[in-house]
Length: 217
Image (cartoon, rainbow, N blue to C red; front, side, top):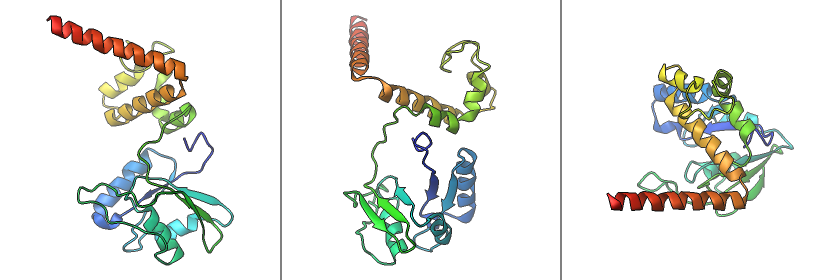
């Protein structure tokens, strides 16, 4: 979504004080291998990585923090402005984030950059982001040119170069699952309301038919 909106993304890995340095290095390597975006690891507790993050913020530009509840967005803002201006909560005992920020708010920082804090996201609907998905999964797009069928969706079609690469261990099964999931989500959100109703009705009929078949058996 950011790529299609021509928004420059920065991925921030927070709470690095909770894991050993070798584990952090491994996670940084994994994230950096699947994105062209800048990746910054920081800790609001130790301050590690905080200076690097501050250097990203340029005067006159607007930045938006996006992420699940409890990842440290508001804590990061409090550190940037040098005081506990906004309320934060301790992450729950289950490890799940707790909603603290309930509204979007624009904060003007001392150096002139503007930062928007947002409530934690539960869902982000991907609408018409085919270009962004293709940019994030270039290896799949490149292999698609070798598929037997031009309209191959890389699931069960014979002669699929993407599936062949996965079965040969050349591509990650996990990356493949993410790619297929995002493509389907983008296509679904891009459908009209009428198309969605037709799809839902068709799926409902399939479920009814399957239940009847199982009952008859």
